[in-house]
Image 1 (cartoon, rainbow, N blue to C red):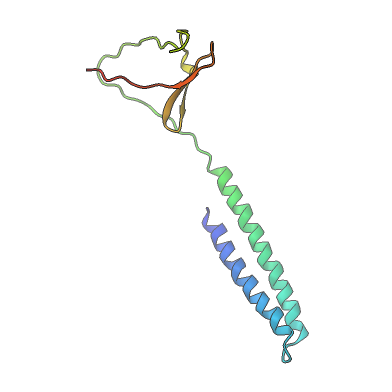
Image 2: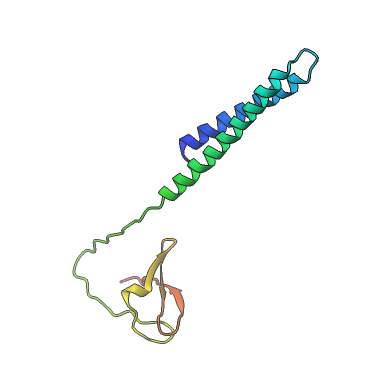
Length: 123
């Protein structure tokens, strides 16, 4: 959440509480009718601040979409092996492999099987 939306929510809470007190005070024997007008205007300002805070939070969420690129530096000589589907044996393309929640997942384009790629120890 952005700082602007948090400040907007805090100011809205203060405005609504004070406006409520002005409205209650206008109905007391010592109160005046102008306090009711001030209270209603304060409520409108408070709700406008809540609306502004929601808009700021939504804008921050939309702007927060980021793309992460992962580059691997592999030591030594690396030989490429073909990756085959565990179910049907069809060769898999690099486009079939996706990172989901930090794990490498593959979906076979031939049979539709989805599974996680595990790396076997090399020793």
